[in-house]
Image 1 (cartoon, rainbow, N blue to C red):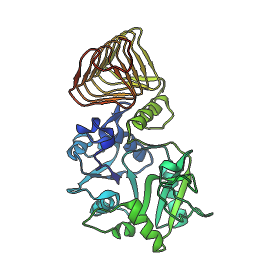
Image 2 (image 1 turned 135 degrees about the vertical axis):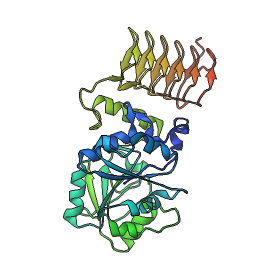
Image 3 (image 1 turned 180 degrees about the horizontal axis):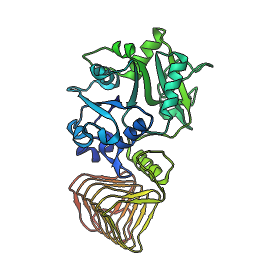
Image 4 (image 1 turned 120 degrees about the vertical axis):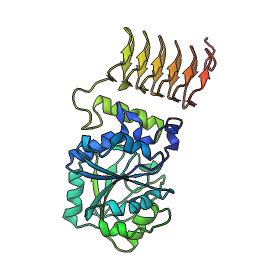
Length: 350
């Protein structure tokens, strides 16, 4: 099952119109990449735990047959947290061994290997743990010499291990049944620590596979670029990878430079002399002549005017950034906002 009920507040204003897992990443809804990995691993039955804009998922994926999957949907009427969300889909689950995913993680783990670890160790719950270079921003999960989880630690400036929770779990069904019902429950803060305290066997499957939480604009842009450049794996993107991905129906004028894993969506337009480095242009976006867009997301139908500079920013659907504007360092423009020519600057040169 996949948890896709979050509101994606860190990615606003993009998530005002669509749930985070349905935002386009390398030209496909982010969730499409995860579903393709699941299908590629030979898993066929998937339940989506939805909440925010729940109807969008079924409208797009239907019964899952186009992906070779049997998809079902369970909608939370009130937010239940990660543990409550897992427990809420229990009536739809058909197997005694259940693989659970957080729906906002871009990963490259071998799912078959995770399941093999769970079976070989006869664990009650298995966690996919990934090693990261700087674990201080994450909760750490130490393990003993046999790989058995010994603790769940909150963020600390002096972490005892570089292993973090990668948002992929294997449960024996009876342990999902133990999760309380009727209230919000955190699987990370409540379920796993309580299982440890009860003496349950929680196993870690540790690797160094590709992993990125796609919750922030910075990670969203980097994850998309990694898919385009072939750094991040996805069965949904066969064929040649490179510095850019230009979708059918998009127009790129001569002299435009597209590098850094840039994505140009369907019907989008890039003007002469424009420079796009690690940019994500949603369908119908327009970047006009001489503009520069770096490490930024340009929403559906948004416009970047001539010689504008957009760096590390998010531009909402249908917004218009006037000529010679400069938007830097985390700027976010809400949908439909119209900035006049030269209306915002970070330098004196006009």
